[in-house]
Image 1 (cartoon, rainbow, N blue to C red):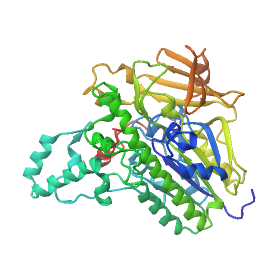
Image 2: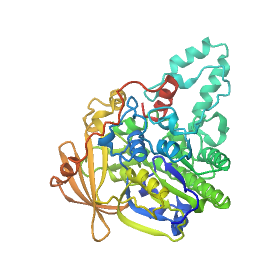
Image 3: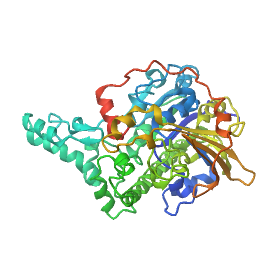
Image 4: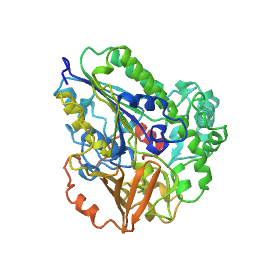
Length: 487
């Protein structure tokens, strides 16, 4: 690859998007029409796996190149030492301009928000119709609103009516998102960050590196009317009544049929993000920048809608986290457009997102199409259920027995000659071997994994990249994390 200037690096993370729900991977609904067409000039890794099953642990692996057991960043009170993020080395060593564009507080205010890593940080701060009134979000505890305390605060406030309207606006975001002005939403649609990135990119005169993390497919799902193609309104109405998706369904407070209904909104949210990827790609192409950009489109983890685990038959897969290491949360899309690439390619070997820093550095060094497939062919996914205190804090409000949600899940993937993948998986004392043909088809082949997982994990040692455990985030950020179900 002969490039007169250093290539740009753009990482787009579709937060919470599983491969199973993308038409790129054969899903019956056309959720990703642009990615399907874009694949004709890009590389699609059909068997990509997320390093973790929660946003923080997986993002840390993507941005550092370490597996979860190597970095051990598994909750909001843990943070990285400086110098470990790919954006730090690009900015300080390669003289790149760097930016991050997302409302995900881990990346902009929390554990992974290293000021030294970015020239520009763009997050989302929603307004309230009456900013001098009561902030209703401050009365949300463990995912549930304290209505009584909120109403008392409204009465005592100098602007009681305005304070009540703030609560109405917050509730309307879940019930009628298309009717609420964007500036009043606590969750911004993908176009907000696409526009912010493109405005920033237009100002750059040299090489740049950027991360865009889109949260449209993260609970609560709120596609705009244009992309809400599969919900007749009933799913949106149902979602507005759910206080805590993860634990109400996990602990049996709601029937799984209701969770299945939310899938209609989820699919619309994916379609919404696909449209913004098209918008970004077309603008970069028109500016003459796409040709010289490493573009990586992927997801940090997937999402469960009540699927049954092959090693946890008594526990459905709900959302993500909760010690679940099912394929719907580990199998993610991965589409890569290398600088100068014009022909499409499909790769069936297991790929890992922990390769992103190495791929970025190799691309900058002039290597042609460095791979997301590890040299030894082994891919690892991990969930540290026993290391996430946030689970314990919330679950006791819904379940007496927390044991199904606290075990460590470990998965090892190996390629087969026929293009399928073998998954060796353990959770607690349970284990299995599973043959995976694609995102839609998997078959259990054995009730154990013959020691394969332990053999691979013996090589994954702590890299000592974590600072001492302490509270690294302010109160406002903690409230935002609670809204997203992360704290």
